[in-house]
Structure formats: structure tokens, C-alpha cells
View 1: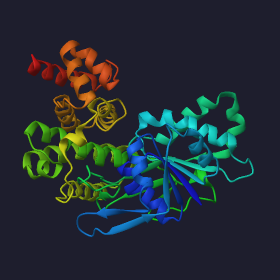
View 2 (view 1 turned 135 degrees about the horizontal axis):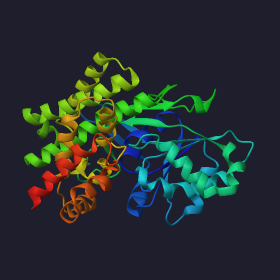
View 3 (view 1 turned 45 degrees about the horizontal axis):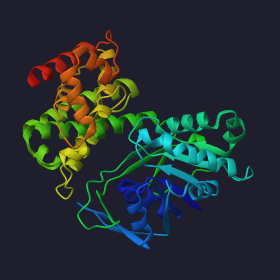
Length: 383
């Protein structure tokens, strides 16, 4: 069995690739970073180090890497003969992965079992996004190619911090992980991925993860940056920050109960687990790494506006989520292009324009005026 994984970074090697290796797949990493591709090909094994309570070391073997920028034909050939294709590249990069998959499907033996495709991204229904890109590129040929692949959405969760200096291609991760995968697209032939669990309805898992883990992580980063602390663990050691993050997650849990009928007690336990993971002192995760790309994090269906908009539509509380959004608006990092763009927009545009552009909310949405007010407050600070 063979799996082609797009994105040979820390998540690719330390989470998705690790579980595929444990499932018995030969691993082919595809990436555009030449030094990383060369480093992977220079070793015959790498180690995934779990740090924190219960952590173990796992050695990964049976892999190679291809530079898709310089050797696209090799990647296409590997896709054509693969059993599984996965991604961990970021939602905005899926459109650059899609052409390789289209070309691989075109070369694929029509009598082979369908290629099993899963996008493992921090976005809702990322595999659907990838499928749409593939179908668009294929055009009229899609009718002939569609039967050669199946697409399943996933929800993935594992904290992979910035890596220690000199670690090579080894990866340091937390012990906890979750990989939930839609069952129905695979019929009677799901992929072999130990540790993953297959579910009939993925929506509650996706939103529980995105609106708890991602919302909480980003909120901690933005509150921590304002407070002048360096790491996520240090931020949550501040009782005021911890209380503000907890309040935001109570609001997202309120939405999850109302929308998906999830059990409040189970959600309380889940929140507690998430915050305990963030406090792991063995993970030197910085507020700057977690807080980067604030424009994406403040967009319409992401971790703040997504749950807050749905909660506001139901008349549920959103004060703490709006508080976290206000912190995100104050995030300034000269090395992060989105942070620079956000601060420029705040200086150059009026509050209503910034609110509409950044959040995608319509002016008549029940959340719009609340966000517009915090945008105006941030602009007053800058003035």
C-alpha cells in the first residue's frame, strides 16, 4: 500500500505521516521546500517525540520525498499508483495541490480501486474544497475521472509546536491526537489508519474541534500577546487570561449544544482537556506562532466569527468571543504579513469597511454592530 502526502512539514511528518506509517503504508511526501525534501531523503528514519505526560518516541521508516516544484511528473506518477492521498498544506494551498491529483487520476488505471483522498486541514470540509478545485481543473474530463477517487472530510487535532534547534526531520509533538474521518464515502473499504476513527456524521466533530481547540488556542495567543508573555503555557498561567479564554469556550460550547445536541457535561470535560493540553510546559509554543495569520482566523467561517455568528443568530451569548476578536485586532507582528495588512486596514479604512472585509459579515447580521464597535475601539487606540 502507498500513501502520497502533500506537505512534508511538522504536521505531515509528526501526525498524518506517522499514522499512515503505522497503518503499513509506504510514504511519499510531496513538498516545494527543496531543503526539507533533501533532508528527508538524506535519512532512512526519523523520530516523532511525544513530550508531556505519557509521551513516547516512535520511529518512522519507509518514506521518501519529492519536490513537486521541480519534479511534478514524479509526483503525478506516484499519485496515479497510490491507495491514499492526504494533505496538510493549509486550506489556501489546496488549489496548488489539485493539478497534481487531476493529472494522477488521468493516468490511473480505471480498474484500480478508487484513490482515497483526505485533506487534513484546519478548515471545515477542507476535502470538499479540494474536490471542487480538482473538478474545476478537470473541466469536461471530470465525468470520466470522478469514479477514480473518493473524497472524505476529516477533523484533525494535534499540537505541533515550533521545533527545537537542530532537530533535523525529527518532530516534537504532544501525546494527544484525534483524527476523525467520514465513513460513508469509503463504503466497505475504508483506509487502514490505526488511531483514526470513522464516523457517520463528521460535522459535530469538525465544529467541536475548530470551535474549541482552534478558538481557544488563538484566543490564548492574542490575549497573551497583549499581556506581553511569550508562550501559550505562560499565557494560561495568568488567571485573567485563563478566565477570558474559558469564557469564550463556554460560548462556543453553548452553540455546539444548541446546534448538534452535544452533551454539556461531555463538552465541559473536552474543554478541560483542551486547556490542560495548552498548559503543557513541555510544548514551547509561542503566542506569535499560534497568533499568525489573524486575517484568516477572523474570516467568516473560521474560529471566531464562525461560532459567534451562529450563536448571535440563535440569540446566544457572544460577549467573550467578541472580547477575543478584539484581542486579535490588536495582534501586531512585523514578521507576519497578515498582521501587517490588518493593522494597515485599521489605519486606512473606516470601521464598517474593515468589519465587512475582514469578517465577511453583512451589515444587517446581528453580530456586525458588535464587531464594528471593537474595530472602532482598536482604531481609536491606533489614533
